[in-house]
Image (cartoon, rainbow, N blue to C red; front, top):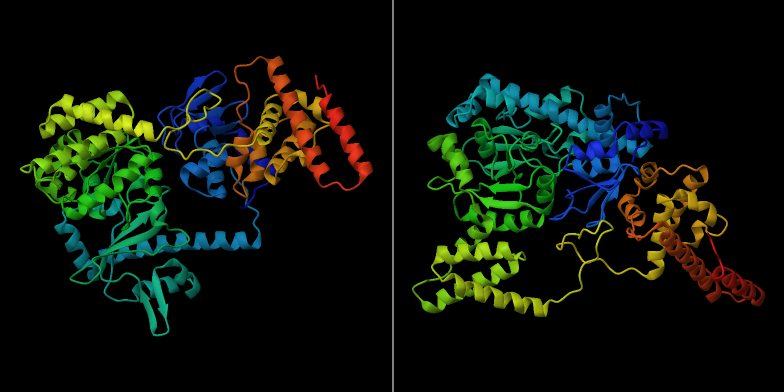
Length: 593
């Protein structure tokens, strides 16, 4: 990680209050001294994401994410530390000085800058080629697809000529080296020669959410294969972390995002006014795609092709989207194959009606399942309803929601509601008996983390005591004077706990605790989430100050006694053993307040 001076980092943090910045991304509601909202980093229904104005930090009691305003932007925008600094500096009107890099950091940063510049030049080259005499085949294709000049221009569409080294020669003239060109994925360098990755194709530049060109998609002109070709993954392009059109769709005022299959579907929909349409980049839908979309919306409407492949794609994508905490619907394109074809034939108004009528993905999945059974055969019909009941019982934990879906399935497929409801209840009871688990730990706020999260491993009493001590010291720095001569960072059990204690104690000695600033220390090794969890342990939120101080004293004694016990186990010196025994007695009698 490239660092600015501490003064610059602190100025950027101070000029970007954490509540203001995070509140511009997600809805926050004040509760006591903190603000709470739905965590943007995992699926939850009850808000366990806490933002503290006094600490200038955030922490999710559900998934454990935490840090300061800089780490939030890094995680939310999926960007690097320098990029997050740049975003926040621009927000606050701060001019950043030139960064200080190590040799390797400078090399990596220079390569990234070069690749972004090269892709921008390539995009301009393809646009020029489309406008040239040789680009008439590309213009004819876009005309057949009924794209306006404004749409072609706004999406930066272009053409790669039939000369298979045209881009290579152009970029060499611009001063790029063969090594840089090889890293770009735009050309292939072999002993037999140099070839452009794309030639004789109409070109679709792919942009990240910050409008940088990071890759390309190309559709072949004629009968060549593959029909569509995408850039390979590079230092600036990861298919699973980007979506076509998201740079525009992320700013939508709509409450949902439309997800379709191809570039032309996205472009056609944007041209018709549906600027909230996106597509994955020639790859299967991934968990990263789901997490990415969850940052910008709570609902996704799938507009995949109306064919067998499109149906399979919906059934693959739906669980991922639901797992990311998104409400998912499926749009009916009948009788047309894809959104582009639908738009050309029925137009935007009909498409809006289809959006309003989009079916919940559970009902879509049930309809697909229904096609596997022959209702003329009583055994198969019964098997379908048993499977539907099983899915209803497992899918919906909320009784009202489960009841509503049970009623919808019963009505659609012709079974008495009461019969299906009894079967769902019976299966639900069986699941409850076989999968009884302890309740999940509650957050300090009293809010429950999402049940979809992996169950946290129970920590030892000593680790809990260490977290409690550090949390209380960060909240009440005035008590540090009572433990300063007793407690040292080396008394803590592991390296991260010791490093956290060391950073906190350094601040406590100055009389000023700044948790937000402290987090910077853990950015380079990417452990700010763990440190946030240490400093946000559950610590008697409803107790009075005397009770909290009593629990704090007990925890300090436990840490010191545990440390003595560890030392005694490895001690072979009788005199030292006697000293440790006396020390344990002193600790047991220790009164801090």
